[in-house]
Image (tube, rainbow, N blue to C red; front, side):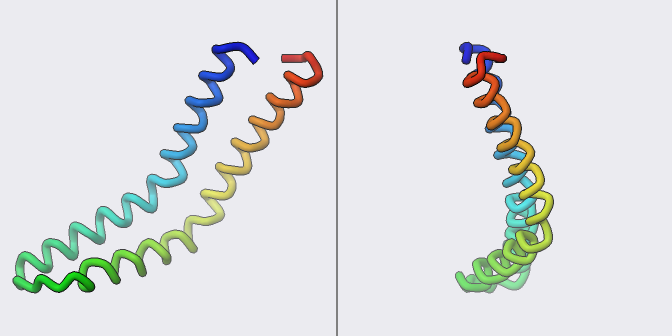
Length: 92
């Protein structure tokens, strides 16, 4: 495996990490912002009020987005394994 191929694999891994974790982080950001706005408007400073809804929303998003995330991870893993086989057989 050449240096350029290793950099390509690392770049693809970072891209997949962003694609897979992005939707969950976005859900957490939106819910966290909404809860913070609610707390600022009502002056309620309860710690569990900000933590529990975020956990529930992120868990629900995880259940909903799991097929999407698995599909991307499966495709990336297959691509990496194809590269490993290509290097092992001398095709790469």
